Image (cartoon, rainbow, N blue to C red; front, side):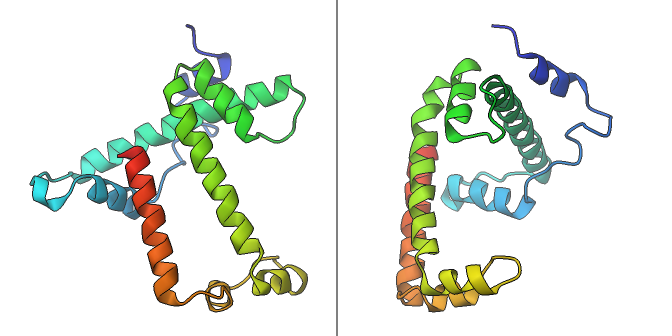
Length: 166
């Protein structure tokens, strides 16, 4: 199957102002994910050069999917790329096996957002904060959960993510 025009453009255009050279992912976050996948007991090290290459591949993959999703949304005369556009892009580019995990992650994200937006401080912040964002400390303090419960919830979510993607 030939690549869509926008994808071919991104793959060829690598030294201009619109290229993806300025795009990246947080190195520390990528390193943490890799460290979780490669346990120390495996005796395998992950070189910085390998991490940087992995980041480049991830950025290229994200660019590929988002370009295809953008084309799909434009064909539907939509101004916002929705989850449905992402799943269609994955399918059209031959990544159909990833769709269930993406849908699961999207549903999980939606649930987390519901919890966050239902915090009492979130309602206050929406009306009283110039930027419409609340302070993280307020979010945790007003969650109705102890820091231990929040940490346990976070660990459960990390474990679920590792199970899905590891």
